[in-house]
Amino acid sequence: MAVITCEVVKDLLPLYVDGILSEDSRILVEEHLAACPHCKS
Image 1 (spheres, rainbow, N blue to C red):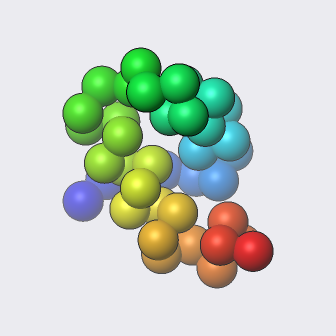
Image 2: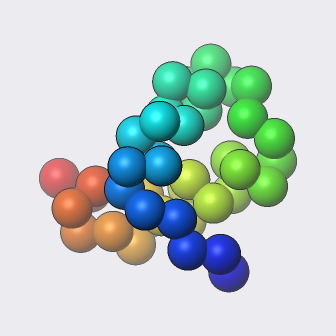
Image 3: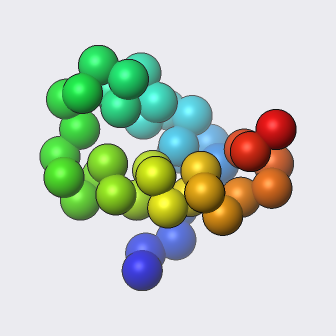
């Protein structure tokens, strides 16, 4: 599993919401959001 920062996730969120991330990027964002206590709130 690759580790990405909260800042990278924030940059990717608009693309995630629009459904235009690659499969790999989508998985990274979802894994980060599920595990990060800062982003969960």
